[in-house]
Image (cartoon, rainbow, N blue to C red):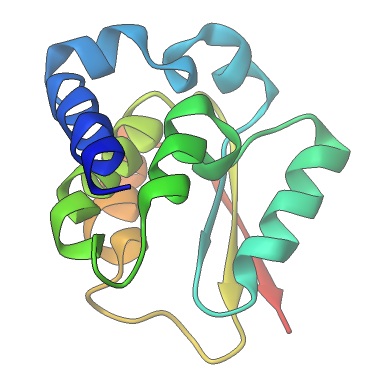
Length: 136
């Protein structure tokens, strides 16, 4: 298990630079054209994914990169994979085209969340209209 984890981390780190930006599936025009869906907070992921499936959009976790990151992320591995999540999240925001949807927990958004520190600033800088949704 440890060997597999190290192999996957090595692979992901090799994709964390320009190669990740050039070849990840969230860079494809079909992803941006169908709609980028973001989420932040407890319970918001489920609502965001349901909305994305219904509307033909995608969340980061619905991409190949997101599925791999999710598969190797545990409490023990999170400190090592967090930079990859941050990079992937920033790339999704950077490549979003047109309006995007974001689902927030009814408890609010943490000031240090990936949404607040990576995704939101990029979307605002690009001028993407943001449709806000509150999940229970």
